[in-house]
Length: 224
Image (cartoon, rainbow, N blue to C red):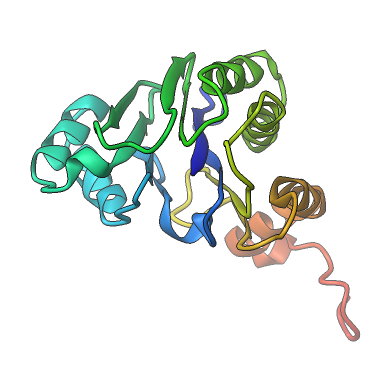
């Protein structure tokens, strides 16, 4: 019921995840990122706690594979979970339990990893990885492009109702955190529209946070 693509940008150090699902509010439950540490997508009969637990292990010095193995070993229902992990150097790891739903697959690429369950076909995650690797834009754009390519390649076997895009730079808060919690049709199209509105303002909001003296106009009455 879920497709995700996680990525790392060596040029900027950014980490991010783009994800879609047949379930409501996938962005609230599945993608987890800690700046300078890693990105985790906890999906398939989702246990949100896996994300923070794996990131904590990585923050303490474990590799992506070591952190994933340590947390999964303590999860009594690990057979139901599908989890991807990306570290701050672009190395990745994945777990898909034997009760992962439907057709499922995971594909590792250069500084990216894609995974999904209840897929229309086994090529979906490979297409996502190739789309990410071939795109030269900023991380958020590459992730969204990869997710769109995955859906065009068949995507999920059933309808998609929610989607999210989350990226972190060096700050403790997200650089981008965009969500479509429910749409009857084409939530990824709506996510693309949100990104097109957010992207031109992204740097302005970061500037406002880091140095208000340099902040551009807020565009409200009385503001100069």
